[in-house]
Amino acid sequence: MTQHETVLSSVESRETNKVAALDIGSNSFHLVVARIVAGSVQILHRVKQKVRLAEGLDENNVLSEEAMERGLNMLRVIAESLRGFEPDSVRIVATHTLRKAVNARDFINQAKEILPYPVEVISGVEEARLIYSGVAHTNHADGQQLVVDIGGGSTEFVIGKGFKPLLCRSLQMGCVSYTQRFFPDGELKGKSFDRAITAAAQELEMIDGKYRRLGWVQCIGTSGTIRSLFTLCQQDNANGHDVPVTQKSLRNLMKEFVSAGHVDKLNYPNLSDDRRVVIAGGLAILIAVFKALDIEGLTYSPAALREGVLYQMEDELHHADIRGRTASSLATRYDVDTAQATMVLNTTLQFFDQVAKEWKLKGKDFRSMLGWAALLHEVGMQINTRGIQKHSAYILANVDMPGFTQEQQLLLATLVRFHRKKIRTNELPNFNLFEDNAVKRLIALLRLGALLNIKRQEGFVPDVKIHVDKHALTLTFPDEWLDEKPIISADLIRESVYWKSLDLSLVIKPDITKLES
Image 1 (tube, helix red, strand yellow):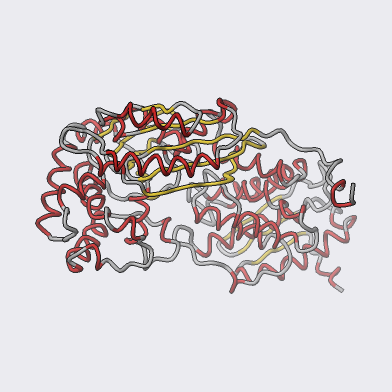
Image 2 (cartoon, helix red, strand yellow):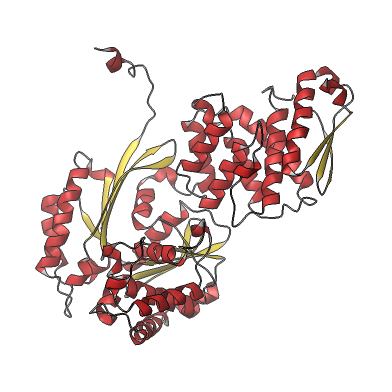
């Protein structure tokens, strides 16, 4: 064997479990192939194709041969991606169109000849439950959340808390069916939108009162239709996916559609040809949902039915804290020194708790984001100890981090990027949700936590007294402690210089400036 062939023979591999989920939807077929490693789902491969199965349903709910053939051709493509998978590692679920089609069994029988796995036609309520599972396992929420998913033939609504869905409903209205019904020739008229919105509102009368009474603290949209509408509404906003879409922004988008006059004239760079032909129906439904449920704002999550199926398949991932699972997985994958990370965490949060009031760090995410940054600030050590702060920031900015929004992930990367060495404030990103001064103060606290634990020794950091005012932090160390730690003293002097770029003063007592020379 050659050197290259043997180099990995002694490397110990972690136990992994490879799984796949296929969503046979009314508009698109989605396949996700993933592996479960270190308690985390890692997406390996995706296949997505518009099939628009729902277009093949006639007034008698008979699925046309042409539509079935489109679907079967897609399954032949997917079969290549599933070659070699064990039967219990693949789950295939079918939704609204095959629920309605009176000849669904014909399609399923032909599908069996292509894929050696059972096809489950799931109920609307089960579809809603699985969608919620996908969102709950990949998005952190404090309190109850409303999840809305607009598919090709149906729209699902779920209110849940944590990992538990509390109320699940599925209504027979989707972007394909509503586009066929109200925009059959592609013309985009105001009256057509009015009729579509009214029709959706009539469907929503069956659930709107109960949902409003149960309530929620945040609303999340999933599915390709909502993603496209979200992107179109946010096209002028930096970090747009962290800014909720409102009914006003959706109605402004509707006006743009009507001004265009026809789907062929919707010239948006982020709108694909496949999505363009069914987007009008989806927009009308979402406007009706906002109005009927009195939604103030909606954010987007890429997780949906297929991700829910994956998490249901993997028992070890059930009901674990999302962000904790993400942090644990990263720590494992990047061989973080967990003892050191814990010491930095404890010191950093101890300081945070004493300064939070005076520094007005009242945002509910500040303490938790600082804590996650402390735990993960050394993930880049696996790349190189030199410039570790840059390596760690790159990893946290680019790795998949379920449970964290885009801005939260950017904040983590920013805190870690400046946890040591010089602070270049011109490189600080602009945040929508976090004030600049708050970000600077969080950076300062993480820097102190890392600096004081630089010896990597349990019990090394003494009992430090803290005095804080608006723009300054005074640390008073025990008598003679700093005298015995000349390197730490020098580091603190240098740190006080770095803090000036954060518009903060760091004062050390007893006075150690005499060591500066």
